[in-house]
Amino acid sequence: MTGTRTKSDTHQNIFTSLFLIKEGMMKVAANLSFMFGEAGGLLSRYQAAKDAGFNAVECAFPYSVPEQQLATVLKETGLKQVLINSDPGDTEAGELGFAAIPGQEARFRESLERSISYAKALNCHKLHIMSGRRSSDHDESAHLATLEGNLKHAVERLTEEGITGLIEPINPVSIPGYYLNNYDTAVRVVQKMDSPHLRLQLDIFHLQMITGNVTNNINKFIPLTGHVQVAQAPHRHEPSCPGELNYDYVFEKLNQAGYNGYIGAEYKPSSPESAASLKWMEQPNLTL
Image 1: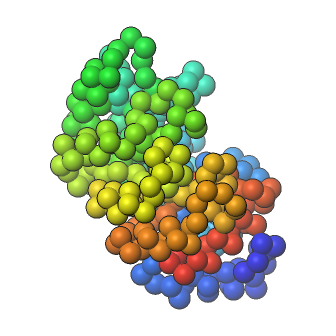
Image 2 (image 1 turned 90 degrees about the vertical axis):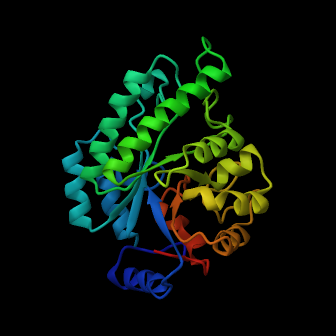
C-alpha cells in the first residue's frame, strides 16, 4: 500500500488483503464528516470510503439526508455505520446539542427521538450525545444538573432501543464554549449513571489538547470507554503526520489496555485525496 494508491481492482485487492489477515485487532471506521470530502456530499462519501477499502464508517450529522436514503446507500455499499452524533439543532446558529443547556429539556428530548430514529434506520448502535454550548444565563451547577437529568432520560430510552450513548469532552480550541470540555466531569457523569448504555467517547486528539498525559489517561479511561477516535494534534490531520502524538505508541497502548472496538478516523486529511492519507493504518494493531 502506498500514498499513491488508486481505485483499480489490483490495488484494491492488495489494500484489502493487508487488513483481512489481522483479525481480532482494532478496526478502523472512516469518519465521513472529515474524510472523502472530494467525493461530494454525504451519500457520495459512502461509496468513496468503500472504494478505499473501508468496511465501516461514522459521521457527525447525517440529518440533512433522509434516513431511508442513507439506509439504502449503506445496503448498496455493504458498509457498517458504527456511530452518529445526536441531532445538534441549528448548527448555522451555533447550536451543538442540548443535553447540558438549562431550559432546553424539551428540545433535547425531541432531538434524541430524531437521533434514535436515524440510528435505528442505519442499524447504528452508538450515539454521541452532544452537550451543547454553555449558556451565559446559567452557572456550572445548573448545566451539570441539566446534563445529568437529560442523560438519565436518554439512558432509559437508549436501553429500550439497544443503543449505547456516548459523551465526549471537546477541547475549547476546536469548539469554544462547548460545555463538556473536561474529562473529570465526563467520567463522574458516566460513573454516576452506572449504565452500559452510557460510555465515554475517547478522542485521543481532544485528550491531548485538553489534558495530555495520554498513557496514564488511556489506562484510566478505557474501562469506561465505548468508542475511540483519532487525529494528530494540534492540526487534526491523519495520525501519521508530524505532531505531538506518536500514534504507533498510542495504538499499542490502546491494545494493551484491552480496547478492541472501532477506531474512528476523525481527521482532516493533509492531502486533497483522502485515500492518500491512509498509510498510518499499516500499523500492526489495526485492521479494516
